[in-house]
Image (cartoon, rainbow, N blue to C red; front, side, top):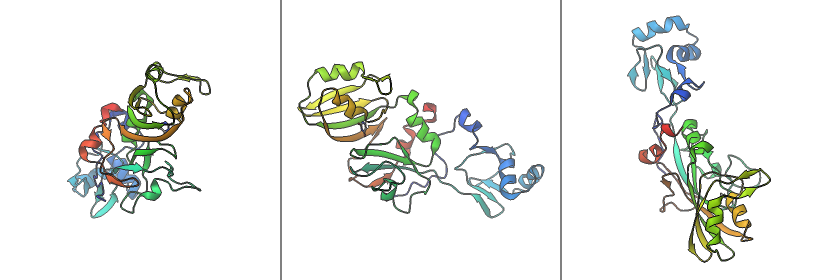
Length: 257
Ligand code: URA
């Protein structure tokens, strides 16, 4: 596997993220790490003893985020790299960090992946396909925030024949009384008698199974093909994962946040 070793996340933080607690001013950051008083940090900067991402730092107010490398003299105070991975999840593997009964997607990852990865958008135990993993919370929240309505495409195999009336029902939205919600318009394309492609702009609990359930048509297999612009790599075998390219990472820009 090729590790994703960007020191910096490839998306730029928004003002809201900069104001969040994950970012702090350089003088405060150094002071917290070294217990040197904040008023003395200016002198360290003037003496060119502090580097941020390989450059001499000059400004006490420079904002430090979770993925900046910070060095004081020759001591690394922070060294975190942003990581972005895609996995082709097999069925029978849980989209969770740990599970008592089943293997989890985190169990499938090797040592080259960061310990603090989280899953971006879950898939059911018996669904397969594209799963994204990252340690960059800004990036994952851009993808999962409901108001961003990031499209997700699925290939669905069904027990019974699909008819044209499904298309309208999916596009009208369906009322789920348990949550008291109506699903957003979804796109259904019939590919074969018992196979369809479905595009959702949200992710309600067992949504696709429940939508086909309205037609008493059980889902036999559900495979996620894409999330936003990001397509599951057709070369990636089930259970395997790879680092995302810069272009793939940037397909979700910070402006989506
Ligand atoms: N809809 C489902 O029913 N299951 C999934 O895993 C994803 C969408």
